[in-house]
Length: 210
Image 1 (cartoon, rainbow, N blue to C red):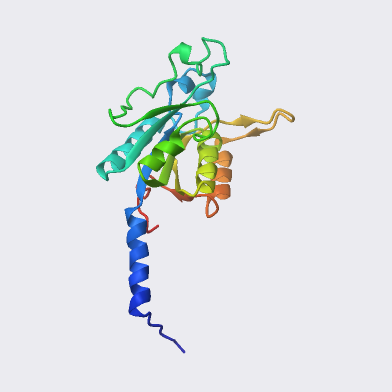
Image 2: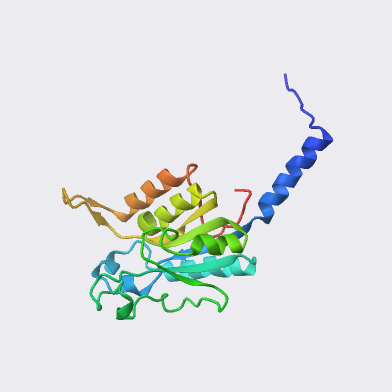
């Protein structure tokens, strides 16, 4: 036996208002650590996504066309030697060649794995009225995943765009065991999905109905 339910006019209006609010939430793409520093490391030969710059470019172009914010985040290690690729003195703490931040898109320097703790990112997003973030960048399970987790705890609606991330094999220091990039990415998605973030492709990153 099939039962039908009819909402009151007041309830229907409230639901529609909530849906409209969800659609109107301002979104920002957080492009994390897509910087020349990584290309200077020997490990770049093992990167999971050699076309990360092209994928990030597609995501950013889509965001701009939709009127979303774009924030560029770079990682700096000021305690390393001056020639080390993550030390700003090396000249490599800059966005990949071929990616061009617009004049009104901030470039924020962080010194922690997540993009919030050592920056003014939270204040910037609050001033801009952003409540939804789409995360892309390097590395999938480090700075991208930690940023996604913290963003969720701070109350943001988080989309994790795995297709626009990249990582490298990890060697466990106490055992020498190596975890491949496919396993790393799978673990990250498994941990984040439904708990901290919505896992998305580039094409569906801004589809709030998914």
